[in-house]
Image 1 (cartoon, rainbow, N blue to C red):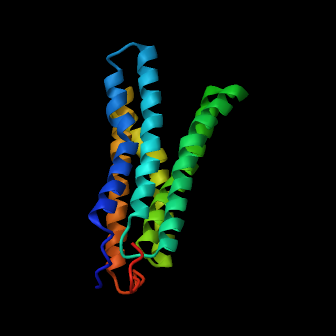
Image 2: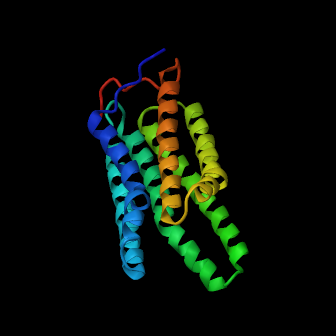
Length: 213
């Protein structure tokens, strides 16, 4: 077992905060909005979702750029990959809904199409989050491959298992809050797994002799 270089508590804390902020709208704003009028609730949730997604993008990118014991090439590549995933989720998710609405497909077909597209976007987002952080942390290529696979698995579980279970357990926005709680728990569990894999011999590339930070 080898101990990978520490990224620094500032970078790690910002990265964790970014992931947590990203799911706050469904965990906090959506349940709170149910006590208000429908129009106000939709506006609160929509504005909050955009703001939190932007904060997730900014804080996560900053966290990767602040990782210690690595080189600037890895920081920039990792931050760029992370930014791409966050931007894709932020921009393509509402565009998909608008496109399906304009096409005017049947309710069942539209919902299935939306779930498939959202699953693909979530898988891509998770892969970029895991790989962006992993590249900056000097993780080996095989850990990045595992990260992409796990990201796809978590996204599929979210669409096929977590959402149906939540809908059976409760109704309304509380179902979405439960799904997001499971989603967040799986993300942090995956990060913990990657950390353990990185501690294995050969799991982490040697830190540079002179840190670029």
